[in-house]
Length: 318
Image (cartoon, rainbow, N blue to C red; front, side):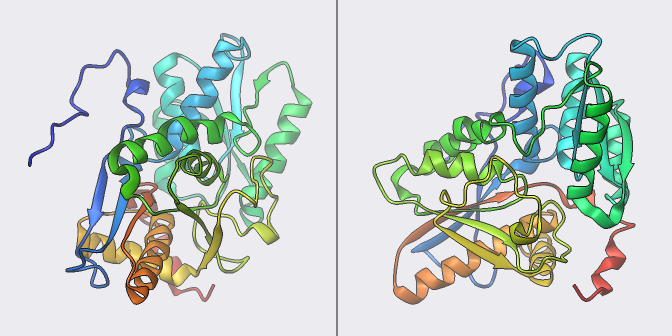
């Protein structure tokens, strides 16, 4: 049966195109090929207009701030970002006429810097050796020095970040799969996707196991993900929400992102590779136990955000 193209509709502004992303089954990966009892789906967050899952949280935080009178003419939105949230802020800011300033580690991939600037955002760089935590510390200093100039949504502490996924991502997955759903798998960065989606899925009257993915090591190459034990832990993170935390190596995340392009036609970033690698591991466990399963994971962003000058880093031993 052919399904209607529900995304084809008229919009008043680009922010209305955020969400209601497609859910696509991954069936050509060798571990999944020919399987009928165990299915893995990817929620294509790369289909958001800003190209990533971060569009959802950025829209929720910005619209809430406007409604509360905290953001408007004469006030600059400033936040720390490893790239995708910055692109989302920049796109939404351009669409709504807002002034946007971003603090990024200097080693964030060049495409993300260029896209954010194309939308008109200003970028301040933090120490690349301090990663996302260094950007957080830097933005706090800027806001402390000029509190009247800035609105600081603080994606790591803002409850509207997980709320976007509670209201959107989680409900959309349920709308698509209903009681067929058995597992949800997503990576820990700000933790908003895992927190909000898992809370919504845990409310349903059937069991859904929610699995959080994090880098196996403190020093890793899975941009956008946090190794919680060695990082500033986001205020919105609650370790009791996920049913399981599954560590993934940089190599496995990178290799799976390459495989998804070749075997599924999905050109995605390395955090997506980590998510899918974890989902496939869970699928194999279910197969070994003879269990039926429908596993949903998140395709966070497009692979073109990771083109040169980052590709050479594959030669590193993480």
